[in-house]
Length: 268
Image (cartoon, rainbow, N blue to C red; front, side, top):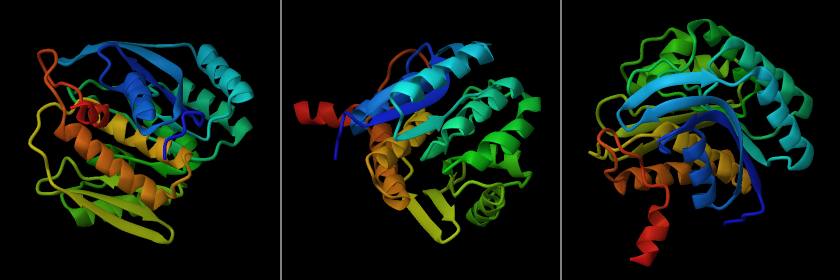
């Protein structure tokens, strides 16, 4: 059910290599069939081998980007990805509070796949206090959930426990991503009256750059198109699984997932 007139927004950092961040989000919005818009929070110098430098934009330009988008083209759904500093987090929360956006997806980006810290340690509390309570859904992986809750996660049962603790912080739903655990890929969607387990095969692919960004932006796009939370997560899980399945080698490190695998398969 594509509708390229349905506006979706990403608030995140820019990835110069195009595999993650704002670039991955916009590719995902387009692939699923929505109109993508962006608010850039930071410029990163990165490639398939890692993140080498990060420079935050000023809180003033971030605020203004949000305001001019909402005042003209209000998004049906939006996601927040990389927001690295305490002052940026507070400014985004204060600005969004004026607009009361529906369908806010938060991907609590903390550490890059290469190990680069993308969230300043002192900013973690601000994310917990200001952004997470605003979320319709938050999508932490296990290391991020450990940082948020202080719970060590070694099993699916630990994921459930941590997810319930995050739910108490205020979001309506929590999608606990279990990709860092051994065995099948298991994600758990937790809400007040919702508990869904999503299992999928673990694909042996090295090119997984941007998986978290892509999944959260896929959920954003599906919510914008009118799917409920369970169906949005289900469809987004299917999308990211295929994007990983058809990922490809580019560069000399961890390559990107294939956002447009469906188009390429139709052409072939």
